[in-house]
Image 1 (cartoon, rainbow, N blue to C red):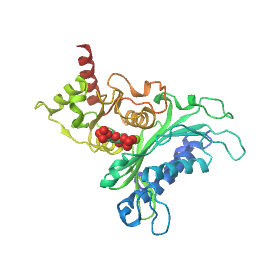
Image 2: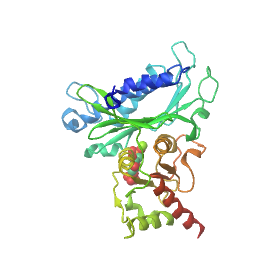
Image 3: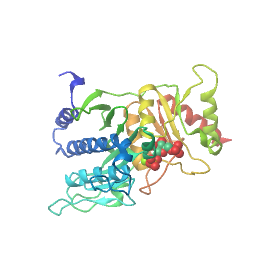
Image 4: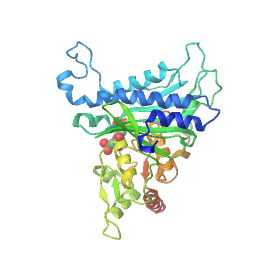
Length: 337
Ligand code: AHM
Ligand code: MG
């Protein structure tokens, strides 16, 4: 069969066969995310009808309570994973604490924990701009059979066994890695099937797009200000193009395809940056590295950071390898002054 005719379902089965002695738990996990993504996609696509079918807090014409989409997405992803008893714990950007999952038999025998940002960039929904789901999977570190603890979630990104995102855009895509490169699948909405459309995605080594909320310029550290000026300089292949959607999944996805860097730095207003290490930066960093790109906090590798709390924030520089290296050079130079 031609690679491109392959469905995500077929791809998952094929990959499962690569790991001879695996129990299929990870495959079932990815399958559940695929299912939840389709459910959320259906709802996101109807978001423009909100004035017709009712707003958050109101009842729709069928008398059903309307929920905010991010709350809805959170419930769909959590419930899909909980009902299938695939994982032993889930932490979500939407919830203060992680949840522990036990099987119907009352045991805690599953291996994996999932961290998820169910609907990132949800402030963009009201204006019909793409949003996304980001997920990250780890093998638990506490013994199988016992309930999960915080320790299972506070692992460096380097320990991830899988990560991915769903982009609800002009078309809906699921992009993920299990540590053997990155593959992208596009949803055919007519039949509800994801097809392999972007096999072996790669960040171009260099790029000419920089993505940053420049409105915060005066609050940025000197190294970031210097790097922005470098991007704007009329020299060699510069000035670069500035593109910022304000929806992490969309900005990273575009930059992975076209070549570029995404930066959400520290600022005097947000001393640790805005993005969350566990729900946003680590999964995107895993994808970036698997696609030949790079992810840094400005000075070191994102996936080497040992997390200390679930909702920890970090500055984030992610994208084409050489662009991130260059931005790090500016950060180091400015910090030595
Ligand atoms: P959220 O998790 O509250 O949706 O925030 C994350 C989003 C990212 O998708 C995006 O890159 C960033 O926040 C935009 O922030 P800002 O509006 O400060 O530029
Ligand atoms: Mg988010």
